[in-house]
Length: 165
Image (tube, rainbow, N blue to C red; front, side, top):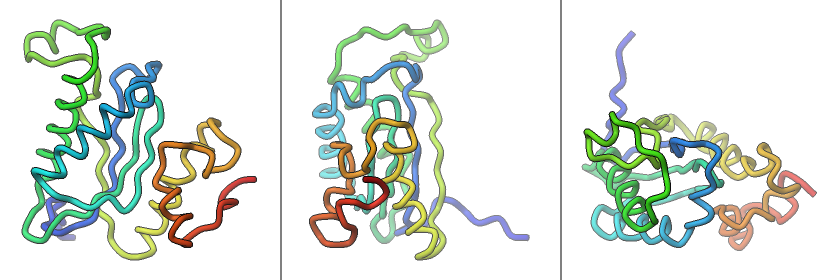
């Protein structure tokens, strides 16, 4: 069996990115700061976002990287740093993080999965859009304000009653 490199130029990737303290609600409390950080990083290092959902303590995103570019770690690092700089210092910072000059906002690692085909892509889009339902935040996916499902409804790719209602 051959090992497939995850760093594929022009690839599509699914990510789960979590706060260090999963009891916090920083991502939705500071959604404008998160959006600004993502916009800024996309202006410097472009990438597409086919689907995304932001929940209070974590987010899921699908990214399409440009041809000849596979550096999603740089993008996540810059997004996390930009968001962290934009919000106040209220989190607990461990000695380990303090020695590395890190804040205590984000988990250091994130989940990454390379999308293999159209079926895999569709499955992950559904997972992203259904995630607010899974966590009990809403009874209809379209009722969650921080989701790309609204674009899918606008473009007629799903109906407003998709996955709930």
